[in-house]
Image (cartoon, rainbow, N blue to C red):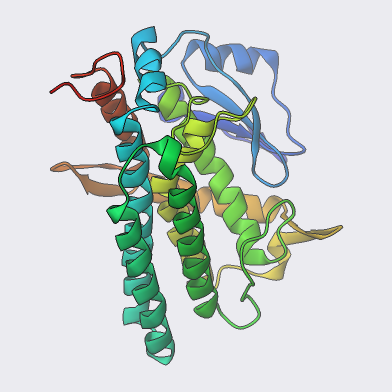
Length: 312
């Protein structure tokens, strides 16, 4: 691997993915070597959004999982999983805001108000019952309102000069959204890979609809893991590592330049390599994503009938 004038050698056993960003090149020999060693290559645009990947052609598991995934979207399990993911997302946001509240006395009262609103949204999602066909818009509407509340709270704790007004994408209107969008792009590629390995179909979503060429299931599942990107980006600001030199101006907004990508990807790798408690074990966060996908796949093929409802 060559970076500017430096050549760096990395053991194949330490590489899980190769991210190719703008102004980068890779040889066909390197691509073949990566495929042979089960290393996926992900291509990211200047905003951090994955637009392609190279990987081996073997399916992650049996077709049965994909068939059950299709059936589940019409039954109780699909609704239950979609609701659970949104509830977990809001719960993650609540825990984060409560952590931030402890060390920010100047905005403690305001953060408390946002926390109260988020708790109300969580309760409303938990109270929903039925099937996705009838409740999809309700779940997504509540999730959207909760997200706006959450990001308003995060803007409140940003350092002077870095506060933002809501979410902005492609291009981002501010440094926070620029870093967060790129982080979500990296996370998106990780979730997609975990789905494929577990045998889940990235295109068959429960909450997000099955639009043409849209990896709806990845959009569903990523909600649970966004918090890791959120915490990483906020910590960069808290540690005063963010400066104007990380961004370049483009028509309509900003994008992350080479310095910004280097800092962010290095910090994200540190986040995903950190160990957390998961079902009684200490494992890396990146492996939590994989285990969760395997757990979903196992649930899909266990105790189900053809209608997609749990066997009584």
